[in-house]
Image 1 (cartoon, rainbow, N blue to C red):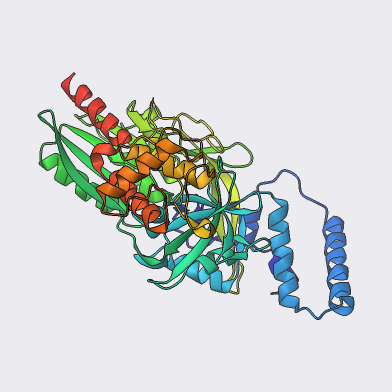
Image 2: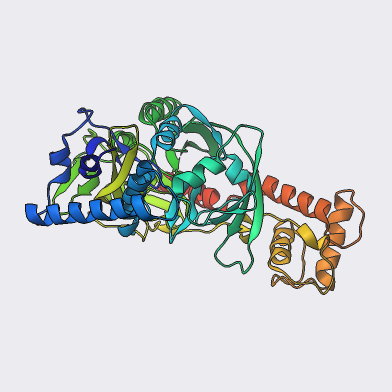
Length: 485
């Protein structure tokens, strides 16, 4: 890579999302100058020459005098990464050739890994969202979890994509992640068995409730064929005579902008913006629905903290463009647009160039989209995985964050541990004893690794029961009410 390449940006794909939310254009690339222009402040040629001379001088000094030999390529790539760190933007990143190749592969029909969207926040690799039913979700990873160590090794100083390469791996292998979670005073480990992550992005179901037929469409991500799949499933549900539609984008980290735009055109009334894109000068482009007429049935969206990027666009469009309700939690808050920029040697930049705004023009970056009906899941949905670890066993008079998680899990399973502050008292012992008797374990009243593992397994099973999903159940009841009005 030469010095000129440091200043060159060749646009290939518009990107919006925590790790990938793409706007495909008919033109495969844009000339460097057109991608770099748009600023009203143009530095003088002399100023540019001085800066280049300064850079060259620093490069030469390091190459000739630094205590250890360092390659020119490493220095150039370090310079690029340094420029991006200066932006203090977790979504603007540099990918070397190997990482860029793996990034593209992850956008295909499947890939091997843990199935989680990540970003770099405050210098830490942070979970944006685990994919629905992925190894990451099943292991208990949650939005905003920060990864501190991978397989016991600190990842401080690694770039986002260097960390991603360590997390990904062959199906069937296990990676151990040390997690920092808000509200937890202790770090804890989560082992995740890597799997094959299929990109089946739209799932449909029919729910019969109180004599009404409701359609359910779950969108797990916005990939190349998602809009087409959504249209197929929607047409099938309409042919079955559904009375109302639920659209679930919980745990959906984003995808192609074209996909959410095309889906919006299927459900948002014509003439209404689905999303707006704003450049650094405040100029906006509105993507407007051309639907002939509003759907003859009510629609309700469902969101959670892991709904990001394209999911937030759809949620905002449902509320502001369609006048529909959205049930659940405030979304992630990813409101900037990135552009993938090829550097000519297989490496790429992903650089924030635009903002996206909701249908009504609201900026949700860092804020998220508020649902019209806010509903949280039961506390045990949000607990960290249990691991007794070095303690060997938890018993009366012990206290820890992990015991607190166990208490919330026991309560979620219908037992009464007496308290939920992490102090193991006599009533907690009674609850543990009852659990052990119910499941054929030695009724010691103490939590060893076997008991902890079974408690967690039963909680996961309960979480996956549709009847325990308060967000979905609230959305169903609200939709039935609207259908009946």
